Image 1 (cartoon, rainbow, N blue to C red):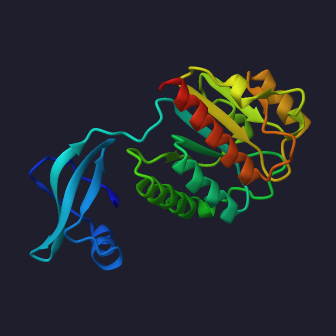
Image 2 (cartoon, rainbow, N blue to C red):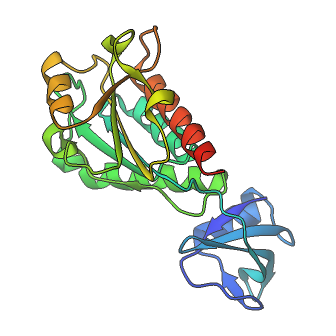
Length: 241
């Protein structure tokens, strides 16, 4: 079943008029006319049936969907800037895994740097990626992707459980399964391709972040992010079943 995020409030018995882009996708790409779809507005979902009338593609709202596909805990991913295609993969998969907010940041070993002249373009592209991913996996919200911030600014991010994945933590650091409990919010910090410097790791520990290991193997930055998000999503969700 396809899903659309709606720009206007929804009400049973009334039609939602799809935007030009949504209508094109529904009619010409996915060919969804006369099919049931899921409609989401402000975190709440309804079902509707698509039809075309007077040249407009609309969805007649039929009933409310009481199910929510959101984790009861907030998951924040602070992701160091990495090469575009890999960063965009992280955006997509983190959205599918239930992350609530994604914070790009610059650290000392980042090869990629934030450029002010490309900020607006990057912001729109990242927003489009998480929106499409949220629709695909039937989420009730679209994760927030913030502007790229400095390492020090990222450290100000608040959460009940704050963790930083570190490749040198195996054998000495904690694991995610030992760290995660019935907290309502989690922050996981993932470094760039070159990892964190020892100074950065000490700075994070000084700010109260827990050093965690993702296993004995050295993971690529995008693999580490996806792996950590998957573990946090499952472990935190199971705590509230």
